[in-house]
Length: 517
Image 1: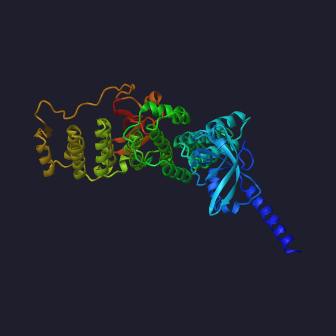
Image 2: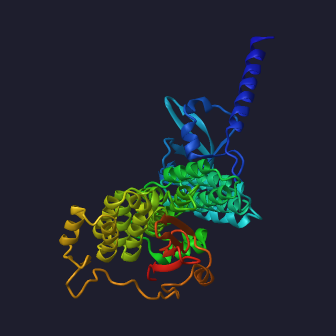
Image 3: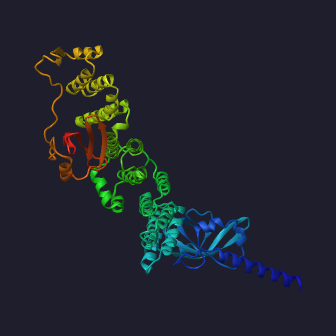
């Protein structure tokens, strides 16, 4: 092969390869002419001297910058374009144009010689035209249009084009959203990521995340057997995704809470930016509440522990905490026989703080009755201790005196016993201890009848017919017979407590006291 033929073959081969590379790098935007470069593409193709002598014309779109005397520049482009000056007569500054030509080298200078210049519709017009030509557009169609608008909006710092890009991307999100199943949480999370990728407003992303979490929460509650670990993981994800959601709220508008419980997704979608953190907190509360109540006892013995966790994690749920405190009090009332004195005094004080004086007294009375058999077995000292318990805990002098009289009948010579009578204002006359004061009653009589229809002297059978079976029953044996404490009402509510006693002469227990309701 001769040197001339070799050089000719080399030129053809090089330009064939160059042409392939050039064509492969061109933008292919729907509706755009083939081989049309943007100014950004042209700027990114430096060094330009490698295009000098290329047989392939280059077509560039852009916005017209300064022009005159047979030359011009495109906005944000470093190339100097040369052209027949007559072709510039109909061009205005910032007009959208397409130019065709080739790079040429004039000595040490490089310029783009334009063979054709055409004024084209502006980018906003082109965007609207592309939208009008769409027929049943898919998500990807909108994405491509969004990229087309975004590239130009970012390059020219054009707010209007960036807004158009957002419109296209939003339409892509809407198209994908319509294709999702109502149970597809993962799909919503993926769309939320795309919103960040497309730099769309966060409101829509938060809606998708909220819907996704709601779907996962509904699904988690249906799992059998229940899996609290899944609930905890979901709560952590929500805490991570919604900053500040773990911070308790001072108050939650009841109207907003009611609307959220009725239709969570719609309420969140229409909520203001100020309301949404409240709704996010409500979602977290529902999960934490379920977790805290999982495995709760039916008898309420763990009520204080649950209430403490509620007050720590979701203090907005004051009613829930108090419900479990009351359940623990009811449990304590039903099991006073196994309590220590400090425990029963605390139980009584808790009832009294809540304005339930009769339950407070019933707790103390039940505790005393549970220890009565043992103390009676101790003789005079035990009976005196019983009297002291009635005096110090219940301020019940009448009952205390009965026990002291029982002790006196056992040992009338016991000096401490005589001193006790005397300290209470009693005098010994005709072998009987008598209090000279006219008013000998230190405690008010219990209420004769409650609003529920309970009355003193009512039999246990009658009480069951009136109220049904009690929720809890505690029983203590005494020398005088049997004492029972019945409680009625659902767990967590303020119980109706009834004390019944059965003496040796009675065929069944009878009501001796009850809490007023």
